[in-house]
Length: 202
Image (cartoon, rainbow, N blue to C red):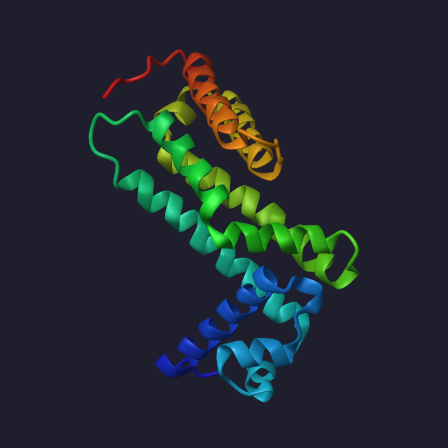
C-alpha cells in the first residue's frame, strides 16, 4: 500500500476512532461500522486499511504503546538540570495512569482479552512488548541507576510500576485521592532509600 500523506492521516484517524470506541462503548460493542462512523470514512475504507480485526487491534496496541511511552520519554528529557528524577519520574507515571485516555483504552483491551480468544492472541504478545519497551524507556531515563545494578534496577522498576498501576485501578472510597497520593509519596521515599539517593528539595 503506497503511503501518501492522506493515507497516513486516514490510517491514524481510524486507529484513533477505534480507541475512542473502546473508551466510550467498550471493546465488545465496537464494530467496524462504528469505527468508520467516528473516523468519518466508509466501512470499506476501514477494511481496506485493516482487512481483519486482528490487524486493527495490532495497530491500535502499537499506537497506544508508542504514544504512551513517548509522553514519558519527552517529560523526562525536559526535566531541568538538578531535578529529582526519581520523584519526577514517579509523579509522571502516576499522572499518566490516572489521566491519559490511552492507558484506559489499554486496560479495557487487556480486560476484554481474558474472555476473547482473538483479542487475547493480539494483546498478550502486545503486553509483553509493552513491558520490554517500558523497561528500555526506564533505562534511558535512569542510565546511572541501570549501570549501577541492572538486576536491582529491574526490581525497582517493577515495584514502582506495579504499585502505581495498582493504586490507579483500586477504588478506595471517600478520601481516596489524598490516600493514594500519600502512598505515592511513600513510594517515592522508598525508592530513594532503595537506591541510597537523597531526595532533592525545591
